[in-house]
Length: 404
Image (cartoon, rainbow, N blue to C red; front, side, top):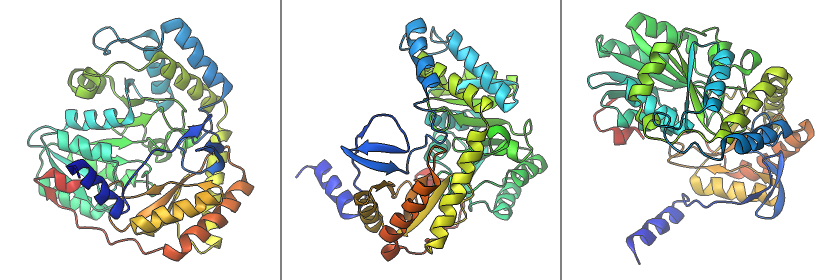
């Protein structure tokens, strides 16, 4: 047996083996999964715009006008008219001075954290931040302090310990696996007191919460007070790619220092045009955001009636924590057999002992679908539901592999 096969077998034994399932057709509330019709409860197409006719048409028209690909990095010849138009539209939407497109949310977070954190600096990162932020910390030459989830006393303690060194506080706006919201008002207050920059990843907030779907920063009344706001085009905006909103000086700095921007091909014109059409729809139809929020409440309330604890979720992301990885896979398979697809999420995406079904609501789901799904999911998960594992204490990491 080869060493790779041995590693694969070890993953199987621990319930961590993964495979790709095949979805036929667009990402709607119901899909054909491996040839079977199922209710889709794990897509990030939150507003149902990925297959909207205007979004499709915009992408097709852009392919005919500008081609399928950008052909080069944006600092060479891959900076196109459609990119500039989208950046201007996003900056206006987020009420920012400037906007900069990246190839993906992962590239944006990894590149920006590494660009802003220098040797001798300290990055303060919530323990439940997305892996792309963790990897940005690894790529930087700064030290990383991982503070307990949403624990502002712990964050302030770390800021005091940093003793005035240049610092960056980075957090998800909406946490991607738990659906809760960062205490941004307190984070920004602490940043001002200790002279730190703030970066907020709004991948799961843009188009989902806040006035007009502008995200957690807008919901907290902090527009213009956060140094960098990152968002994605691949979730509520139904396309692919990412962006960073900031002031003009910060944008110029990132153009010159963010390696994931400098060394990546520009966003494909159809993806940029599709996102621009989706953004226009969002601005024209803010009731889509209201419908998404109502649907999130419907699912949380329906699960509560079934005796399921949704662990403080406030958004369209609803965790159904199982505990053991193998048990989470079994619950996923049982629900799938009953026609509901909610993917099992296991380490390293979540901590050991907190494997779960991560439920993602869309505005295009009906209340009846969500209530029926809650009954199916509770039945599948109830026998194996376990308490969340206790949080590990955070500390400074000299070996950032420990912070994964």
